[in-house]
Length: 102
Image (cartoon, rainbow, N blue to C red; front, side, top):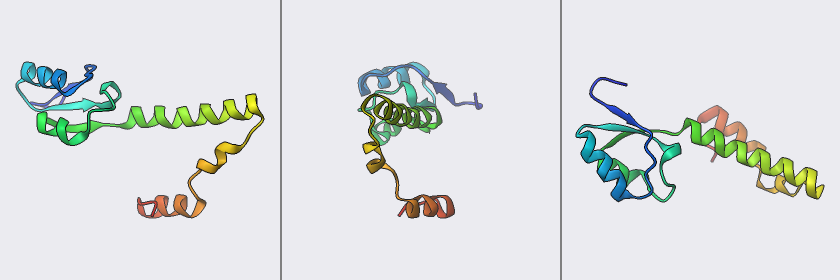
C-alpha cells in the first residue's frame, strides 16, 4: 500500500456501494477493477475518490476469454469464424510501434 492511499478490491455492484466503501476509508483509494461491476465507469468512480485503476488482471482475463472462446469454436464447431474478430496486422504493428492501433 502506498503511504496514505488505500487499495481496494471490494466487490462493488453499484456506485452506492462504492460510496459506502469510500465513506469508510476517508482517504484516497485505488481500485482493482476485476472486482468492480462493469456498469461502473471510470469517471463516476474517480468522482467518488478513486485515484488509480488497476486493469492488468481484468485485461488478461478478457484476453483469456477470447482465446478460450476461439479454441472452443475450433474444437466444437470446426470453425475459424472467430478470425473475423482479429485485429488487422497493420493495426497490430502500429499498436506495438506507437501505442495506438489507429
